[in-house]
Image 1 (cartoon, rainbow, N blue to C red):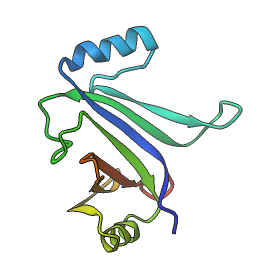
Image 2 (cartoon, rainbow, N blue to C red; image 1 turned 135 degrees about the vertical axis):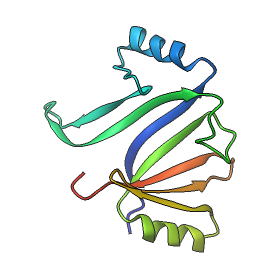
Image 3 (cartoon, rainbow, N blue to C red; image 1 turned 90 degrees about the vertical axis):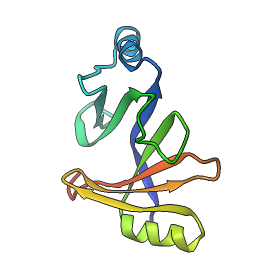
Length: 128
């Protein structure tokens, strides 16, 4: 079974999220949207769009989206079989959180790595 197939997103907290978003927009040219981030569309070697995006987002430091982790970042990894991977990780003794979310955006589960970082696992909807 394949485990991680790519990076679906990078999320991090900032003490002054709007200021940091503006810095990235001004100095690095990232098209930060009103929701605090952007979606980078994947392209092939010729620059033509292909199926898939990677989300990049800055949120407020006060949020609890990364809980129970105290880290200021979280990486979202794409997976092909979330249920299968979660079962294997539990068998291997990993700290997998009980909650699994399903929505129009796909299926999500979380595992805590040995350093206490929350890792998001994402199975995109079919066709993405």
